[in-house]
Image (cartoon, rainbow, N blue to C red; front, side):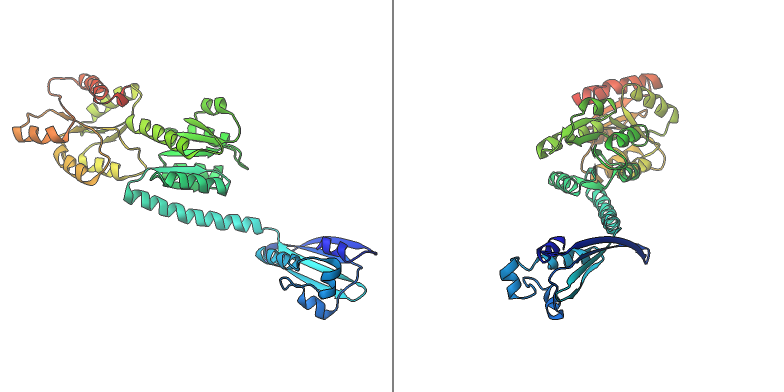
Length: 382
């Protein structure tokens, strides 16, 4: 509008005024551009907002232009909750007025946040039914979020998205994803603050966080607890390699103890924690299955299973576990009972190792379990 005023006002003056006022809880900005130029007739002003049209043919010949400028201004103003108007008098000048909502950006952000919240809920439901691992992407740049999401979904991950650091912390606590990618340069709460908060919270501190940024601050990232540090633009191959490595390590270091004897459970748990394992506990097969079905819990890399338990014994648990779950963890059976031949035959195909506890103390059982875990897989060394 200013360039038009300058074009059609070779002599005289151009004035610009900006005002704001409240209209129905919204702040409305109004900009007036007034010139004392050639002016227009009503017939000419009626044509102004038609694409590829100017006041008349002589205007095009003399001043040039495509006749699109004011149409674009009008469309933009309407997208922002406002409009454009014109008043003019031939030979005396013209006033163009454009208005728009000042809080339109906030409304757009709120709409995006609502859309993302709906999308994230669908992602969680999908990951539960399909058994996919979930990655939380925390980045204020929608282009980066979209790119990371496409990279991860191509590799069969479910992806949650957070618009900013505060939302990212909230979602990490609520959904407990398998891993988090975190931008550093974000408004309000930057990536460093988010990382510190996550690592100070016992509920989510175990979740591996991969920093992704254009700035090279690897040492700072690792010192604050980041599991990896990637430079933007993030290559898909490098991203997937990092996540698969970290999630794999995390899973291998999680042990599920299914045992009704609370004293033995405590001794085994303390021994495993001392060897740098994360321990999940269940006092019978039914509770163990409930724990495994809850996607907010980390996937165990190995299961320690007692056979003789109330509600659901170890044999019943194994049958349901093998039938219901796809990614099966090795199972070490702990039993104090004398096993019949048919039971031993069943366990030979269902369990990786059978450990008889009748001749050992709780501490001896715990120590033997640590040795057994170490021999099952090189990934499960303490």
